[in-house]
Length: 112
Length: 112
Image (tube, rainbow over all chains, first blue to last red; front, side):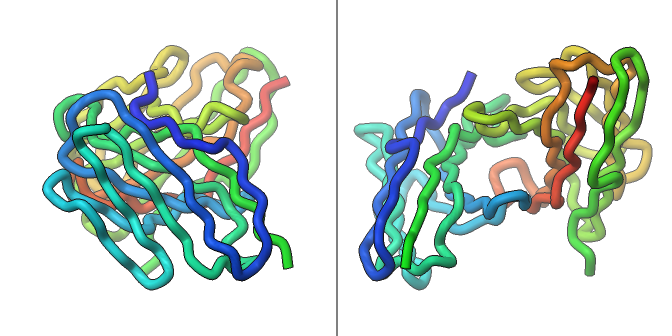
C-alpha cells in the first residue's frame, strides 16, 4: 500500500522551463521528503519538509506542503538537462516512525 | 567514507537457487532498509531493522529473510528464488526513522 502518489507520471520539458510535480498522500504525516533517482542509480535525498512548514527552498528547488489537502508539490526552476531523472515523494506513514513509504514517482525529461 | 554499499551489483539466478545480498554502511546509522523496485511500482519495503539484532517485515516480505548481526551490515536472503523476485534491490540507512535516507547503488537480480 503506497501512501504517496505523484502526478504526473511523466513530464517532458525544454531546458530553462520550470517543472512542477505533485504528490498526494492519504494519512497524517510528520514530514514529507522528495528524492531523485538518475537512471540506473540509487535514490538521492533532495529536501525534507515538516508538517508544520508550508514551503521550503533549496537552490532551484521549491517544495510546498498543504496538510489540509494532503498534498505537496516540487518545483524545479530553470530546468537543465541534468535534471532528467525520476522524482519520488516519501512520507512517514508506515509503522509509526520506522520507515518511509515511497510513491511511484514522476519521470522528468529535460531536453536541450 | 563510502556511505552505503551493496554487494553484488548484478546477479543471475536459476529458479530455486539461493543467494544473499549484502548491504554495508559506515555512517553508524541505526535504521536500515531493503526495498525492491519494479517498473511502474516505485519502491516497496521488504524488511527493515531499527537496530543491531532487530528486524521487521515491510510491505512485501514473503520469500525473503534478513539478518542484522552487526550494526553496519544488513543481509537480505532469498532461500528459493522465483522469477517474481526479478527486480532491482536497494538498501538504505538512516539515523532515525523519519530522517533522510541514504541509498546504495542497487543490485540488479534476474531469476530465470
